[in-house]
Amino acid sequence: MKYFCVFPHCCVKTNGDSVLIINPQTKQYVYSASSTIVESFVKNKDSYSYCIFDEKNKFYVDAISKELGYIIVSEFPPYNPNPKISFVSSMSKEKKALGYNTGWYVPSFIKFLSIHFNNIHLYLPQNNLYDQLEYPKQGVNSYKMDKQLWREVFTVLSNSPIEIIILCGDIDELLLDTLYKIGQMYHNRVVIRTAICEYEKVKKLLCEYSNLKIELIVSNITELDRLLETSDATFNNIAFIMPLLSLDDFKSLDTLNLQIQYVPLIYDIKLQSDLIEQMQLNFNDILSCSTSIEDSLIKGKINSNFWGSVIIKKNGLLYVADEFIGDITQESIYPILNKWLQKSQNSWMMTRDKYSACNDCLFATICPNISIYEKQGLLKRACLENVYTNMMTLLSSN
Image 1 (cartoon, rainbow, N blue to C red):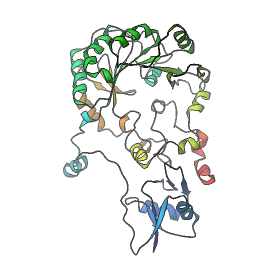
Image 2: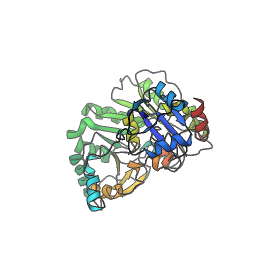
Image 3: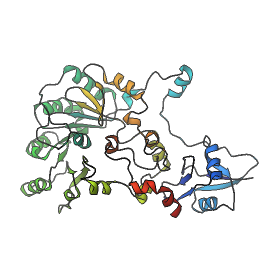
Image 4: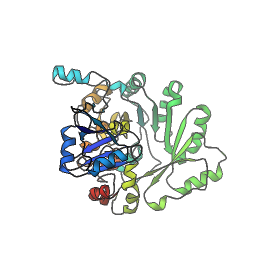
């Protein structure tokens, strides 16, 4: 008997009605809505996908010509373990033995720590925009941090493999005190994200901390032009963040060698429809989203937009993106995160397979991870609506 086997570097996705095989590297794919083919793949989903080969069926002929699979001749069905990715731990054994998990080893997960300080300089029209920009909201200023908060910050720095520490807010006494306490040991991992009006203070800091990285938030293009005209600096350690509220804000800059990151800020889907349309994916964009089977498998497990990132507010409140987790002045950060990770809908593991708007889509593990805009309910999904509703037609015609 002849069997068609899918190459292990290709993704197979079924939703009960159709099946898609795609190579994330070459972007080659085949699609079928044949109930016979779909049933074959669903039946064999626990071992890596194979079917009895039908040389008259165009689906298999196309798959072989596009190098998505191969044929073997055997009396018995092949055994090809399903490629998968898992956390390196004894979690599965523990659950099998006890019936539940006692917890995650949380310290190893935290890689990105943001600390939010005061903000009097940067105004945005709505509070949810600060979450999109990953910047502290405007509010009552404070110039002293709780001792327990400090203990928790240093607990994380001492026990977790922190790659980046982002200090966000005005360059005032509170932020400078924090920089002084952590700068000597972690200076090459510290980024300061602040408003462009703090540039003069930034220059002084760069003289004192040569490895410091700076991100300046530019409210409008005029501010940046003015800075470039009046400064002879090279901006080697400075990146510029440009918030976009409309397509009119997106203007090409005449300057070269500047690091510029554009961040769309969405607050009204009707008023900002042109900007949103540019943000959402068309069919070809989706095909280009994943570059390997490993990339797709990771997307099926975790949300890399948020994974490993935590935000500590100046009052001790702990967040991941816009999701409140707990208060580290009342309880230690690791137990808080451990309990939070037991929830299936936590932001670190919010994948498209769990997201109601996308869980039946064949591209759920190909598309980008769920964004802050989707979490906030501003966008329904990453792709254009006409792409999602006409997906089967697009797959059949390409």
